[in-house]
Every structure is written in C-alpha cells, then in structure tokens.
Length: 249
Image 1: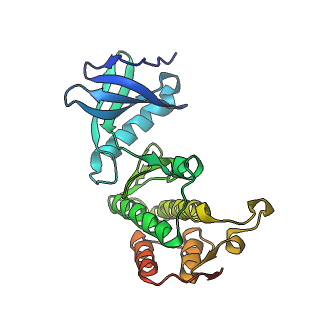
Image 2: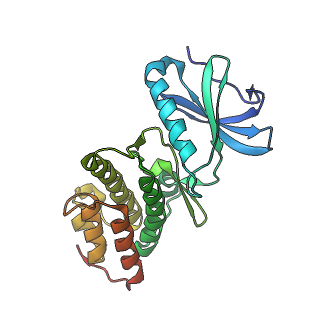
C-alpha cells in the first residue's frame, strides 16, 4: 500500500510537509519546508504500487532534472529515500498554472500577449532540445506564470536522445511543437467572444494575423512542420515585431 504522509511530518530529517499539492496516480507531490535552508521546496514521492513503472520513470526523471540549469525550470535538489519510499526534491516556484489562470481566474490575453508568452515558453523548449531532452507533456497545467516569468514543470514523460536517430529526434521535437501550438490556441481563445458551441475549427473562429495562423498551422503540422526550435523562435520574434493586423484566417 502507498503511504501518504501528513502535514508537519518530516521526511529524511530535512523536509517538513506543509500540504499536499497533488495526489496523482504515479506520485504524490508535497509542498515542504527545507529545514536545512528554511526555503520552501517541492517533494515528489513515487508510489510503491506503481513500482514497476516508477523505477524506470524515477531514474529517468531525476537524471534529466539534474542535467538542467535554466531559470524557467525548477532546480533539482536531491533524490532520497524515507522508510521504504523514494522521493526527490526540487525548487518551489511561485505562480499559478495556465489552466487555473485561464479557467479559474478568467484571464484574457491579446494576440501579442499570447505570442510574448509563447516566446518565453519556446525559449525554455529550445534550451531542453539543445540538451537532447524532449518534454513530451507541454500542457497548460505544466506551465506556471508568475509576473513576467514563465516556468515549465513536470518532466515525468520527458525523453533523452542526445545520440538518437535524427528522424526520431525530429518526431519528438515535433511532438513538443504540437504542444506549443495547442498551448497558443488556449491562450488565443481566452479573448474569443464567439459561440464555441458551434464546433467550428479555430481557423474559422479566430481572427488572427496571417503569420500567426501560419505559425499555428506549422506547429500543429497542418502545413509544412517545423524541424528545429530555432525556426519556431525566429517566426515568433518576427510576429512580435510586426504591427498588429487581424484578418480572417
């Protein structure tokens, strides 16, 4: 049986639990105080009931996190055990995820604001791709916003292919690009005032700059797909620098 630890319990003599942030099928995530530093941190407990799947996932995720050093990615602290359970700890990042920002808070973004957020997220994706890492799960719950800062979290489904087959690397990169396109659509729909019950495609519902439409179509592989993250970033930069002009898609 999996043991869920309680508030105020101390893990490995160092991490005092303040609350449970997430109780997922593969792991339990706690907000803790690091008694060594007096800082808040996040601790992830891998479920014993999923041991077969989690042994490999735990090793891969902790290995990947230790390789990353970017202000947009929470820093890895350590892997450790407590009793018969295995954990790892990482930096706590202030902020609210994009899912809550859009649906709970009702935040609206202009097209230019959407592109600015996408640029910051894409810069993080470019960094991990340059290190041979592909996230595989860039969804709105896994992107945190805090002021002007953007953070990408949850590398549980990430893959490493430094010396992998070029075609396989391209496919993994395009999976991340597709997720970036999906992320951008969520942001763009935040200010959509039409009737979403009509189930029209986004190309008919959203009135965007033609180059924004092309960016989305390439990210979503509707038209010639992107192969490298730098191409995506270059097109976003070009769009941000242009005057706003909305035309039917």
